[in-house]
Length: 119
Image (cartoon, rainbow, N blue to C red; front, side, top):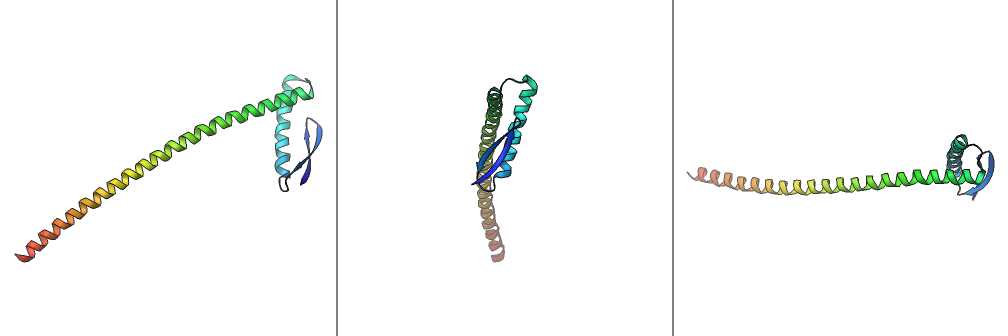
């Protein structure tokens, strides 16, 4: 297990993470620190715990919005897949009908050719 030190609101926190995840954890902490800094700029010194809770709520709000967008996109993808599948099915039916018509036409041409050959 790897160890990294992250800084949030000027305070260092030692944290454990999986090997290879150090940079990712540091980046997440930096992003969260920006939320805290934004709130601190907006509201001033309102207490570490309150700032942290407010920043956490902001992150959760952003997450909820992103999840909502993902669900909408998943629904849109499902609709597009169904439309594609329906179009492919229709194309297969059209191909089958065309092959059948061409087969019948070929038979007629062969019959005409056979009659001409016997005349």
